[in-house]
Length: 253
Image (cartoon, rainbow, N blue to C red; front, side, top):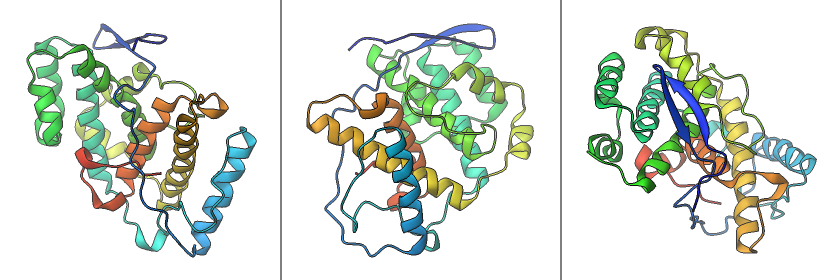
């Protein structure tokens, strides 16, 4: 695999790079076909997501009794402080993937209390003395997850059409310009409905990407399947899908 359109971003005065593909995502978990009688909010959510798909020439899943996010009444989205901690952890993971100097990483760690916020897998990644190229690429993709967290916390207005990688430099600057206390204070978690709407949409976009892959076709609507995958991962964590921790999130379609 090779990098597509390397990015040039800046954080603490250092030029960084990233890649526009999703390595290591050659298989996608798929759960057994469900038989669900949707609630009103599930049906309305699906209707809106499918209208979005059709407007971008993206195929829709036709089984009327399967492929739903849980109804609002059964979902507990992550608390604001938990999302703040996750965003800060992802900042660190992204910068580690760019092979930022250890002294600068240490300063970021101290500024935001990073170690206490990392998942077990992230701690192993953060403590690795030398990353392989593949590890660095995989870590760099977590900027897309950071972008979703910043959206969920109100720092990013919208999640744009998933045909290109986010702008890590802009996202990093949001955080870099604030102390941890300021970042936490300014954050306003979005409503359950807003987050579930995006979770339902990304579920259908990812289904379309997986369906195309099984047919050896490119992702429909010129979508970037890596961006879609990472958004699906982040949004499933936000809605507590299957109550999984960050390291164990699944993106079932």
